[in-house]
Amino acid sequence: MGKTLYLECYSGISGDMTVAALLDLGVSREKLEKALASLHLEGYSLRFGRANKNGIEAMDFDVMLEGGDHGHHHEQDHGHSHDHVHSHDHETHHHAHSHSHEHSHGEGHVHRGLGEILPMIDNAEEVSPRAKEMTKKVFTVLAQAEGKVHGKPPEEVHFHEVGAVDSIVDIVAACVCLDDLDVETIYASPLWEGCGWVQCQHGLMPVPAPATLELAKIGGLSLHVTGDEGERVTPTGAAILAALGSGEPLPESFVVERIGLGAGKKDFPQANILRAMVICSGKKKTDELTDTVAVLETNLDDCTGEKLAYCQGLLMQAGALDASFSPLYMKKNRPAWLLRVICRQEDAEALSRIIFRETTALGVRTSVQQRRIMKRWPGIVTTDVGPVQVKHCEYGEIHKCYVEYESAAKLAEASGLSLDEIYRKAERSMD
Picture 1 (tube, one colour):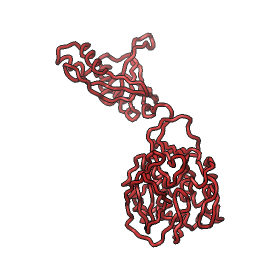
Picture 2: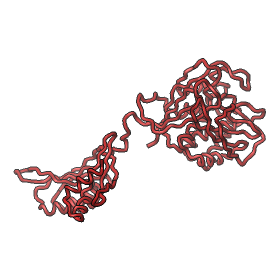
Picture 3: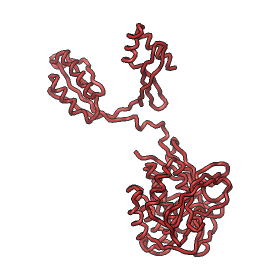
Picture 4: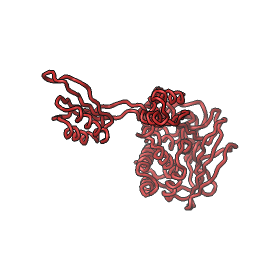
């Protein structure tokens, strides 16, 4: 079952912040580097490090364009400590995005569109099929939004916003990270955006950027416009949520399992970070503490006790989870037994055959039931006469520990003490 991710976007969201936050959750950096290298994209290197934002340490991810340009507009931050991973290919054109978290323009542009980008993704041998599908979905939505802004069909959108090296790296990296974490559902807070104007290739552009606003409309994203000047939500960040977000409100309560922090490239009065949380429902996680079993039943009024006991032993040896007898009275007031077997569904056929072969049963009733079970794991406690095996059981906040009978019986026999004394010694050792 896939994980649920919550992105807290109170400082906005960008591609590089998203990748950084997911890396901080424990994504394999080696796997990410291999995936990006398999794009055979030229003219950049990756930078990984840590940044300090208003006293909070966060992961920092940067795409460095060849020739010294930053793919992500980078301010001086004394909290940075980076190491570089260079691509092996080289490209003479440098490009960058206009947006505050991510990109500043270079002079040259390679005009890539969906026709060039989608085959590049398909041919990346180190990118999983699921990550490829997510990446193509993000690019398609981004091209759809940019096309609407510029009055072109998505397939004819050929310009730096979609084709920039850093945008491609950010989007592919984010999707590889999501796949590596096995994220199935993404929730997002309202996207806190700035206001005013930002300089771009075509002159001054309003904040939110037109493409960002279009993506918010497409994805049903909730915007919260602050009074702060400048851009906080970039088209890349908005496209990731528009394409992959659940579009549903965050559950009222949840349990946080892991936290990742991604640093932005600007300094705000508040910490410029994106918080990514792996969450589960508000109740203590018990989803793995349920299973489905088959229950086999038959009534027996003409079978000897020896045969019944022998059949029960065979059933347990063959994998039954439990096999029991309950007394009952059948037709003509005959004393009889109800044989009830609990087993895995895949074992029901084989166990039914044992019942038919070893008893006088002419029919076996079968039902499928869901059961709640306590999580169980073995343990050992030490007493002054030797070790005793125990079984730990847990369900939510409930915890129990039981002495294993066979282990206690062997120790009682070996030590000359009564079984009751062994139990008491073991139970004292549990405290």
